[in-house]
Length: 494
Image (cartoon, rainbow, N blue to C red; front, top):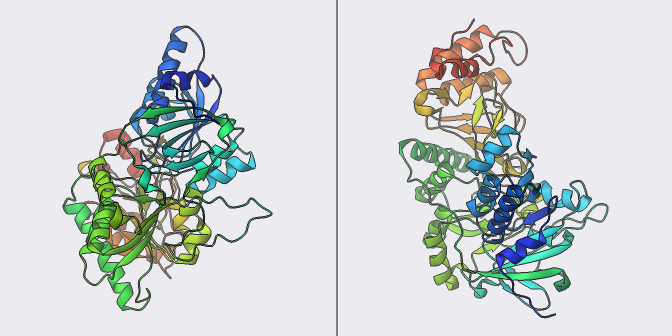
């Protein structure tokens, strides 16, 4: 086969109204950047001509603005799964313009293979290199790339020279067999490699290659402030206590960490605490703080699905590839987030909650129970199967007008049966071996902001009925008060 080079506009011309399109990457890392924008521009022209044009969009997780943002602003997305974080797309989801299915990230690839979500018309993949016999070196994110490449009728390649070819070996591409033929996934430590360093595709399906040189649209993180620093230090102190008590092995256990400013602060605190031994990571997103901890030796090895780090830091990693190449591996998300592997490795999981109730139930996704924020992501994959599952959150939001801890969550993503520990800047509540009332007492005493502590004690005292005592006519009063006045402080129990 002879490789065919085309423009982004030519690539977009192949995509038709109603097509289902899968994209590479995981977060903006490894996501296509020019063909997606060209599809959005095509959608605008089609709409101006009075013709319908929308596609179904499948990705590993969130993407950059050149994908989710451009397509959303062009009203080009009829269906979206499994996770997003773009403000324009979020508006379309919450207004009903775009149908959205929020999914556990480990489930998507297999459900595509099972045929649950229809056929895949196109796979659009960002790569660092492509050969005539169909060997692809992916870039900074893997996501669902192997599955969509195999299922799609046609493949469009973005060959991005911003990522060097010498990163071959960074990836470990492995797809499990589907039931009833599936075997165990033979990952027994984070550094195990079980697949191929390249993604092998049928070259006859490649309709064209678009050359580009674009950095990932990953942003930096806000420096840790007083609140996120306190959360991080509380996490580190809790884990050191567990280590000293012998409830964590002396060699420590692999860490899984969510993405964002709190997660970055938590990892920084673990690195600074001399009582925490050097550890490994088995996670989905490798972010800026991990790179610093690999340099210092506080992290020995990091396995993930994407290098979701700031462009300048990624350039630095590439410049120092000899140092990093044996300390990193990127996998498909059904392996990085696999529940079987998470439970086998004994992961300590640390994820961020949007809202928690006094009995330990967690809302990760919906503002006031109705408006989608981003999605559940991989938090459920890890939480249910963790050695110790931790959720972190600041105790208040919106300058104190919202308490992150309420009587009853307005939307449930992780139940009290899966969550083991809650940590805020105020302190730590350990749920293990505690009844619902004991969990509530621990949360209110240790994790609630002082402005709301008396209010929640009053609620618990008034809700005397049942194993999990609730007053159903008051359980959402704090949410209703915020909707009415914009401040939960005004809540009255009536």
